[in-house]
Image (cartoon, rainbow, N blue to C red; front, side, top):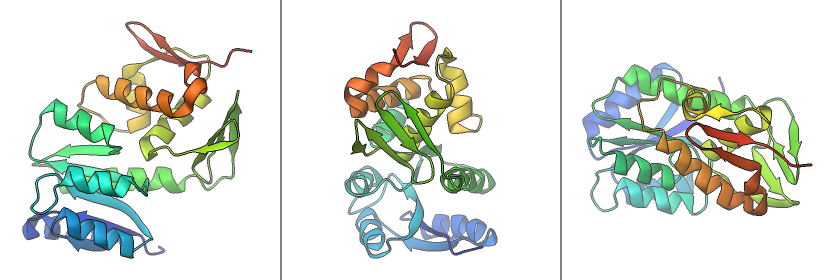
Length: 226
């Protein structure tokens, strides 16, 4: 396989080695960083990093701040690792544009499976396909979105959510169904994760955010009024 670089960021060398060993077995190239500052520096120097696995609690610069810094100029997929299981932390992570959220202790095999799922969805855009709904244009292959001809920056997960809405136009979708399909694994989180993403997505789409209708007590429906 062509070289795919993954940046593993954790202040515990033992944890970095554990994750690295499992990723290397799958032929990924792994770069390491021991804190947030180092992670940002390495990411800036290596433009071809495909995904970041980022711990929360670290010296010098924690995972939240590192995520903010990176999100300032890149939408690279980020998996956040944390020893905490507080849902407020999880919601904060999604607010910052985190794509997946895994609590320690975790199974390395599950982590690798999630890495593969994200990279598969990122590269599955091999087919050159453009979807149009109202004033929104979704370019699957380029992973870009235009609203009224203007480019709009979406996180990886926001793009996946919008794509799911596109292919299910006019269909009432429950929060659970959205979680199962967009997150693509058994997600043990709060359905408010969906509300957080929809709120940000609506904001970024401007007037076109009205295409996403709320179905009270159930979920959402994507509909373009003719």
